[in-house]
Image (cartoon, rainbow, N blue to C red; front, side, top):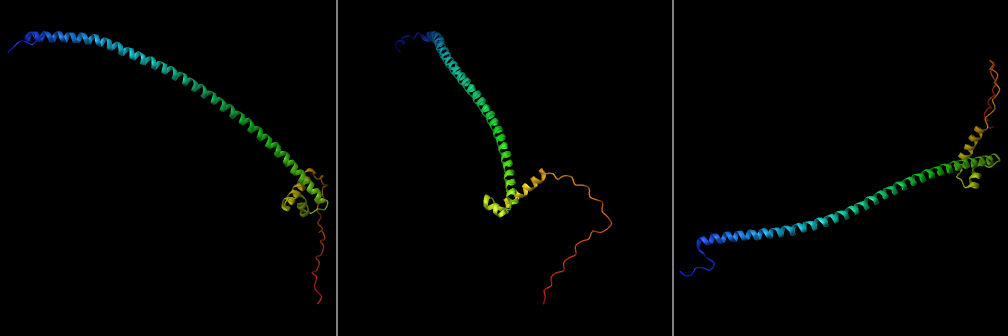
Length: 180
């Protein structure tokens, strides 16, 4: 057949060539693997460094967030405390104002009673003060009760024990009969 193929040394040579090639490939791969491994480790270190920087930035942001949340909570609590104090003061002011107004309502009622005693009727007083007549009457009655409570009656002398004699009663008047 012809000349042997260059680099061909027969069947024995084929096995030897393959072994050498295989050995060379492993050697090449082993050296290439080491280089590749070094590159991969370097990339991982870069990723880890980037992740560490990312983690530091996240930690800083979380720290800022927590500090702001604490300040916001404290501000809200302080605001609620101030609001509660203002509400307490407002309630005190309303109570004082209501007490003063009630006192002045009593004074108005006493003045209306005095005007009534001086001869003004409830209708006249309602027209004069522009207060509804029902309220004028209620105020006059309230002032009468107040005045009665302020001037307690003096203790009366004991009445004499009842006698067995009946007390005479006035005779009833006869109904007038028309003269026909």
